[in-house]
Amino acid sequence: MSVASPMKTPAPMLVIGKVLALVLVELLVLSAVYQHNFEFTCRASAPESFCAFAGRIVPRALGVIAALALFAFARKDVISRLLQTSRATLAAVGLNLTGLVLILLPWLFVSDASAPAVVVVAAITWVVGGLLAVLGICLLLAPWSGWRGLLRDHGAVLAVLILAGLALPEIADAIMPLWQIDGVTEATFAAVAATLRALGYSIETIPDEKIIGTNEFYVAVGAQCSGVEGFALITVFVTVYLLLFRKDLRFPYVLLLYPIGIVVSWLFNVLRISALLSIGAAGSPELAIGGFHSHAGWLAFTLLALGLIFTSRAVPLFRNTKVARQSHGAPPPFFSDPVVAQVFPFIIFMASALLASTFSQTPTVLYPLRVLVTATGLYLFWPYLKTLNWRLDFLAVATGVLIGVGWIVTASDTGDVPFGSLTGIALIIWVITRIIGTAILVPIIEELMFRSYILGRIAGFDQNGDGPVVWWRVVLAVGVSSGLFALLHGRWLEALLAGVIFGLLYIRSRNVVDSILSHAVANSVIALFALVTGAWHIL
Image (cartoon, rainbow, N blue to C red; front, side, top):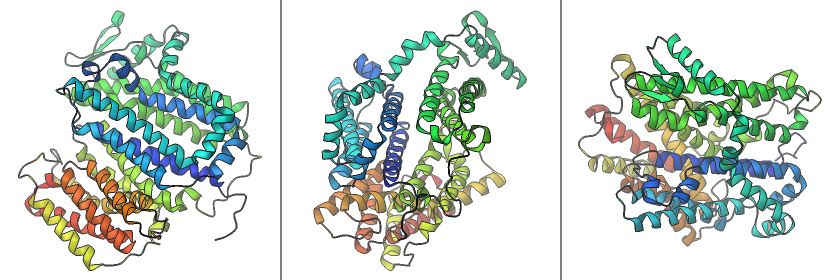
């Protein structure tokens, strides 16, 4: 290994990047699981205070992250010393994954029909799981001895920042009147009406009540829909970004990001409401309210935030040209790091599922686009993938055939048609990409994540799968990785058994290619059966 140069990303930054990648994966898993087949209305079954807190957990988490980022910027030397002691331990990984499992567990047993005692158990499970997951993340960043010293010296400041982050939604509500600029709601209402008319919709409006729509579907453009919340979020984001990267930016010109962000945020909000009404008027009110309305705001904010970062880096007016730039001759550490290569493709895969469920009531119809995005993500990590020990193992092939046949035999005879009303060339493209995704892409992505990363970390193996076999750790690793793998599949029992077999293959050879091959053969058998019989619902 070559000696680190000044251009190389510092180790603490790699630690933060890896942990953030893990957190993102877990958030995507939670979102994917709880967005599907989870019928539970919190306020109908649980205390109002609990539901009010839990219902806004995402902005609270973002608030805490932003607050801690400010502390890290102000005390860079303290954070650097803390992260230099970082080491992934079984306790840290175990606590985090145990917390994740506990958070996911209520999905199996709680619903609107549940008794009050069951809801209480679910609430306790969520809270305990959340605390354990956060504790595990903290211990992945640094050992307890490091945190003890940090809390001793800066505990009061950290407590205030964390509480402020948790209370961010309430703080935003309190300062909302400061953002109630006269005419914002009226401007948003008028812009939405003009946009819909330009698109050819025949709309009706009630200006006094800010109601707009058609006879079949309408919405009220209240203060909360005017874009004011987006103004606040963008202002906070730009402020944090300018503080963290002020040395890379050119002041005072970069302050233009504030008006640019606010204006674009308002335009995104107008487009979001217009799209919501268009989807609802087109005969899909369930998609408009249940899918698009739930995700569009988050997606718009994410795109805008990334766009502002790209603009600040790409436009010379905003960039500090005196700061040395990293050479483009070598790939950045992000794409060459084995841990990132094991985790990030799964992030892309899950994010594509979230996007598909946002824009379609039958998200499986968009599978060709998901394959394109996922394949691109894997291609970014090709330098890592080609270093794997690719080989043809007879046992991996045989177990793959058995798993595939078992999945077919235990499948139901009927199910929903995943390709909707597609016909002709569109259906042919869907079939081809579905087979490619099922037989090639999914096995690579899922095995890198569940076997190479999660199982390997819990079992105590290094990034290459090397390390002594401690049987109780191996059993725990196979169980946890297979359980998490099963939660992503509707037929969780069959998926659990398949995950155990894939895990044992990996333990046997310490070569993730064997579990990839078995998974790929199994999925190929199932895909071939679906192609011959038309039973695509079993995939």
